[in-house]
Length: 618
Image 1 (cartoon, helix red, strand yellow):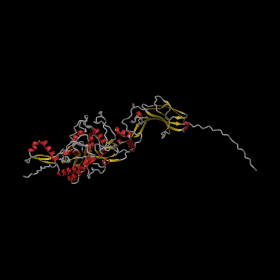
Image 2 (tube, rainbow, N blue to C red):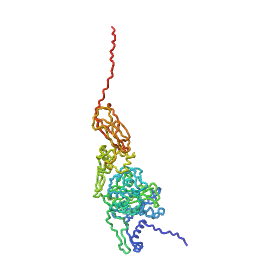
Image 3 (cartoon, rainbow, N blue to C red):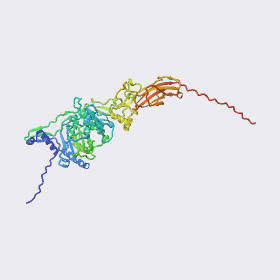
Image 4 (cartoon, rainbow, N blue to C red):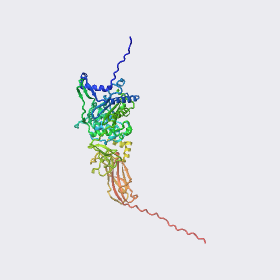
């Protein structure tokens, strides 16, 4: 009797994650018993060629990153106009238990890193921001929850490159994925709904409008805009597909038709028109930013893997400790999302969205666009409600005469750039002591200055207190002492110094010397010093000190006894000048006409010497 070695039959399922996903949809809709008793024939949206290529691309890239402790990846591709899922890779190897290969990572919620930022900025567009809105990327502090009454240690976000970049527009901030501006954007938008507004307006509700269902915690903080809430690759890719589809949401779909064993049509998908969940103008603006290769060059360079041979919007994401890499992007024809990481949450080694997920995304996007459009991708179409305006490149406002460089920017027709009077450079007349706008209540010490039009308190601190900020101000024409556009006008009750010449009057002619100068110097706060000075003419360029002090009095006092014999006759200006401890000042001037004759010196007597005659020899 012969012994045979029997081999267990192998039944390797093709596209197992997809089959499992479709089965779960059928069971949820019809029940497990019904679908098997009815002998369903199910037609799905999957494109087998694209699916095969996607699986190979994911497997190949994961293998190349093995030395960086990268074991897994996922990919989702959606046709934005119909919602059809054309490819779904759930893991690098369904049959590899060591990487939890049977877990569909396209459906598993993970932290998206910066890939969530576009949603924050579109939500900000809905509240009035534009691609030219100025945000100060400087060291800043926030209440972690966004609630100003939060007693916890402040949240201090940092950028990926460890640097701060000063004033940046929304276009530059998002294209380069700067973190501090994104947190300021979320602070502006709000995390949860504002109960004082008639409609849902926080980021979570905005994300829900785009089809994201996993942001359900009640305790998210401002780090949500940096990826602090879990989302699935499928839902985030579908959210990007909304932008690709001009703001219309067509939910992702996997099944196109079901026929039972008798040939009866049980179900057939009819692509809906979709709901307009985002304004077409805002969808175009976010696509314009995400496809702007020049705008992202400072962080990504001009030849990064995101720069494809055709216009395509793209955004990467990397979470803390390199636990998750993301790249999502789209054209009007296709939205593709890629995740790279480890199912067990162990961190990768120095692998970012750009180096981990983006190569898969770029390779698949080019292959799929070639197949779907025969190499002729649909461009982003500018809606009728989009206009172009010239802006100051530095400030995002319409350019004032001081703006050093300009560029064109896109705007929704009803959300235009700030006017040139709101540029960073602004001429204002200020009270030199309080720094407030001058009025009749403070008309005795005023000056027209070129002021910095900055309201962000952290930007003001950065400019005033850091070498980097002061260099920036000097580079753009702001001289010391720096003046910021005041928040309000001065009022009669605002404390100010009282400076008076008590024994002299404007235009007085002085004919005798010495001149005693009595003055009142009353300062309502600690100050550095006061100076009594004079200069030649009615508007001197140079001043000479007659007296210096640092005490305040409530009565006039003798400040100087001035010998005028050393001063040529003519017009002079006397000035009382007080410096505060806040780099502000107050002054009082009067003009005098000096007519003191310099006394003629008495001649010194000299002896007359008669020369003695010299004898002449004959």
